[in-house]
Image (cartoon, rainbow, N blue to C red; front, side):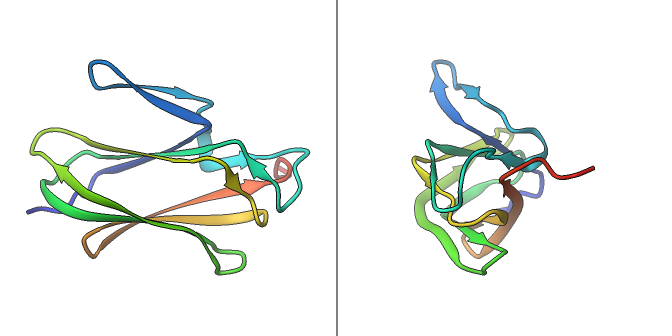
Amino acid sequence: MTYPTTVQFLLADDCRQEPGNKFSVLGFLPGDDLIAEGMEAGMALPSLVVIIIFRDGEGTFASKVRIISETSGSEIQSSSQGTAVKQPHKSLTMVLKFAPFFVKEFGTYRLIVSLDDKEYQFPFRILDKLPEA
């Protein structure tokens, strides 16, 4: 067993798996910022999709996902994802869809994906307006 070291993280509005192990990604959010203009804290996004791609490593792992608000320190979501199998020389893609996704507050969030006890952390922001330059 070897833990992955090359990992990619994408945010989007939606995603679906297609034949041939392809994914259609809708509303890709570059820059890890989600701008929810016109929305108030406490409202819900219709959906939030997180795509995590593990490029290397191999083995069978117990997987868990948590989303934490760095603004308040509270845990927003937590769930066991079951067993993840990373085969050698193949990518492992995890697609996590939260529908709806309740925005309790604007600010920085942290997605934490655990493969056994190894954590992979991905910060992202949900903002009510574009940041000033």
